Every structure is written in C-alpha cells, then in structure tokens.
Length: 168
Image (cartoon, rainbow, N blue to C red; front, side):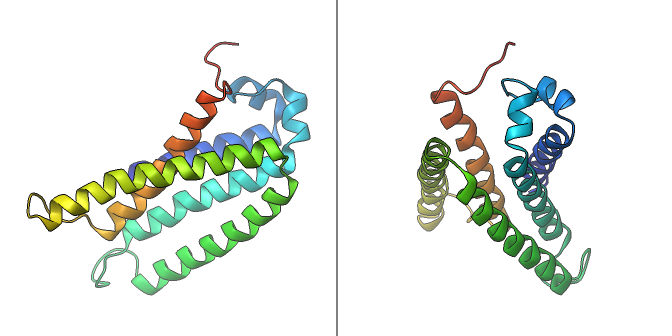
C-alpha cells in the first residue's frame, strides 16, 4: 500500500507543480508545451488533488490497524478515507464534464483495462486461495493492488495511443 500510495502522491505532486508552474511542468511532464498546461490547468489541478488524496487514503489505511491497537485510530482513518473518496468523486465529476470525447475514451479504456487486469490478478489469486494453494490476500492488498492496476492501466492505454514520449 505504501508503494502505490507514494506513486499516487508523487505523480499528483508533479502534476500539481506542472499546473501551477507551466514552465517547469513542460520540462517534467509529457506535454507538448507550456500552453497545453495553461489550457488544461483546471483539469490538471483536479486530477492532481485526486491523485494526492488517493495516496493519502492509502497511507491512512496503512497506518491504521484493524483493531485500533496501533498507529492511526481506525475511526480517524475511516473519516480520512471517506473524506478523500467523497472529494475525489466531486473532483472527478467536474473533470469529466470538462473533458473532450477523446479524453473520455482514454478514461473508459483505462478503466476497462484496469478492471480486467484486476480481475485476472486478484481473481486468479482468489481461485488459488480457495483451492488451498496460497493464502487469501488482505483487504488492503486488494485495495492497493486495484489502485496500482488503475495507474498502470492509464500508462498502458496512453502508450498504446502514442501519447507517451521518452524523448523531447
């Protein structure tokens, strides 16, 4: 959960930096130029916040124990996660309304790819656990894995669409 949380938080912070400082962002992010960052600023700010909140939610869950005996108190963790999820839903709704059809299609393709990858990995794991070949995964492992699959799927779909460039 920590690794996926860090990935979400770092990506969110980089996108936030790019939205706030387009000159720096144009050098760090996979965008055409500063003008693109300025044009997409509203969506990028919402996306950055959602990414940071996703990372924070995973951290809160990682720091809380199921019985409340150590780390973050479980009610506090639940409230933090609930606030993060509700905020992400509101942000996602606003971002979706501002997206064009192509961006919506990329999002839908990423969600479908993530769903099938998550079903394959965790469904396969569940079958093996059911048959006694391995232990069942924990709820936090599933949550972190599903969020990790979503993040990976975004990059896979973007790469398939030719949207990722390793050179400038």
